[in-house]
Length: 345
Image (cartoon, rainbow, N blue to C red):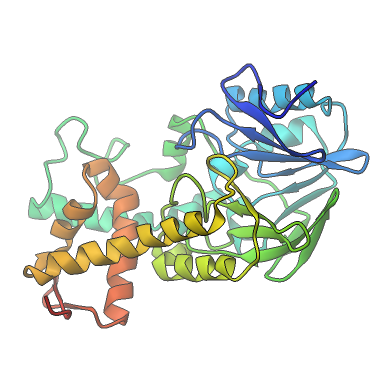
């Protein structure tokens, strides 16, 4: 049976990368859809890179894909998670209920988030988002919190329950115990592949990509793909994201397998586009400030169009760029909540 582009019966596709590596791709790269799941034929079993969201429909998509491949009865050797976000690790509860993987592998900097998922509240920098939202409400710098559709999800417009939000999107997280922690430069062998760990923070503190230097293949996670991932100060920020891209640029890569979207053959174009999106926000901020001082919330309105996006990820992203541009001495804070450009027109 040709499985190079096979529908799984649940809106996704099973795409053949090689005889021993398949991609289970959902119908959309956008949240709250699942991340891509990569399935390896690993000797007499299978291994997974990411497991996707934990709701029934998305887990069923993975089960159907394994049946299409004829791999559904094989034992599970390894589960490797690029990072502990719900669209990548949410299905761990169901995976553990159906399989008994010999190894569960994550980056050491993401250990706390699988032990205590509630701490994602801080790596997402939700406290900063709440603080800025309170400033906006009390200063009437944004639409009132009682107007329908103009507040972040949750009952209290000044508070945000991140795990509750994940649950409402049917992409929850769970606690689990990894068996192995990786760090930069470690190697992991999966089937016919030998990957080196590339620590690529920015989107998550322990985000890792995997690089096979003989096959010139990169499992990128969220760092490169159809969607430019959000970033927050506590996850590495814009500066960390750009440094992660620099690491990837230095590698010889013929093919990128992203967590969102199809495989990437035009590697340098994808890397360049991602970098331009991030640096473009720097330029937008500087251009706005060259025309005169702007408050924090005026900049937020320029960068992000809706109150929901302004709350998250907008606030987290803007915080990253303000800190970056201040450190680079391109902007300056002139009072408690306003900034000017140090660049000339």
